[in-house]
Length: 110
Length: 110
Image 1: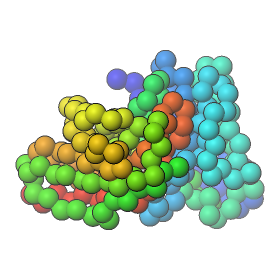
Image 2: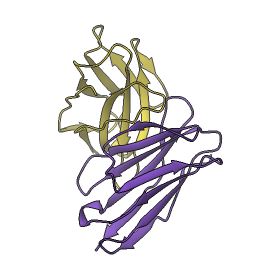
Image 3: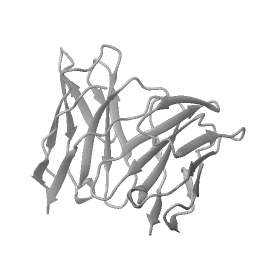
């Protein structure tokens, strides 16, 4: 069965640089979610989109923005990167209730 | 968001049943109770969810207290592959993000 695809899987950036993470949901899933998991931490919800509109917002920094495109894929844009942004970023997609998580993108900020 | 309380860790033997408790005394009347688990180096994985009645699926059973202030995830015959961090998270469903509190680290002994 098709799963959530995230790219890239690993990303290394310098402080103050920008990064773009991409998420391709499971076909026919109309809702996408972004989560951040710092080292040794529990996942924290950032933002979600339903039918290309922002739906719910969590603890997403103002330096981050996201959108969902007409083909339902989503991108998380991160600017002015800080050392504390180093984390695993998970994307999840859903059609009704159950969220299916991708393998994550590991972002390292040096 | 409803606050949840779970044991930090639990240990069980392989092929024995495991009961994982969760207290969510501030849950709203319309929130579903979701359970997810996270295996090492993987994204969270959906386990089960319910509203008021007990629920069963191929992975587990969910027993919900009559007052909905607590629930118990039941793994009927634990295997080594069930070793993970288990999270209960009340959520309105739909495009609502999940709030992952401090889950229970389940250790399975062979």
